[in-house]
Amino acid sequence: DRNSISVITEGSAGQSFAAFCNDGLVFEHTGTCNDGVGKSACGGEIIVKSPSGGGEKYGENVLVGNFTLFGATGGRLFIEGQAGDRFAVRNSGAVAVVEGVGEFCGEYMTDGTVLNIGGFSKGFGNGMSGGFLYQYDPDQKLHQSVSHESVLLGCVGDMGYGKEVHSHVVVQLLQWHFNATGSRLASKLLSDLDKTLANMAWVMPKALLQYQDSHEILKTKTRKELVDELSVSLAEYQIAEVKRAWK
Image (tube, rainbow, N blue to C red):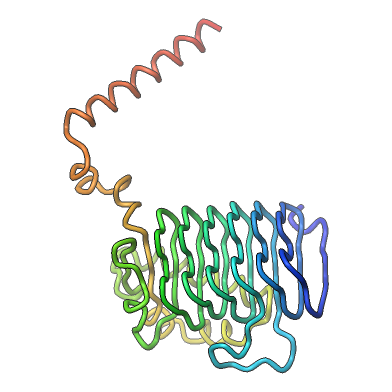
């Protein structure tokens, strides 16, 4: 069961809160945490709630330190406040919602999904090769903070056919975040979805196109290389089938 063990704490947590979190575990903390929250997590759920007294402006409600979700491969994280630098660096599968990040959010991500509904800084998505980032960007400033060599970006509300898919993801993440933390910001965004989606940016690594877009694939490989790759793959499949039948 995903809620087999609950660990509920408050106050000031130290380094690496809920590191190596696994399926069945739920860590719920009200207060602040140091660096490395949820690093190497592979499952479970981590919730960090805001204590009373925090401000609403960028930098006034920082709850966790740097390197949150470093190297995580799974699980969920919900933070009712802001994080430090390199949020979700090297994330390889975790899902997270946060209300503000520092520099280099999503750096070197290879998989997973992150939704940030607060402020941000430079280096957003640097070196990403997989996964998706979503950023609430009512001031249209995100394009100044991303590495255009690494990622593509656009508006969820302007995606046409893809709007339905990405809208569903954003709404689901906001609902999960509200259910976990009672976030007033998430509640506000859910109450006016048309406006929220019109101001929600998506960020996708260009590297994904090299495996999913035919035009990009043909730019990097010759027809002979593609035929050779297909032939080897087909031969390996047939050999495996023969071995299976022989056994």
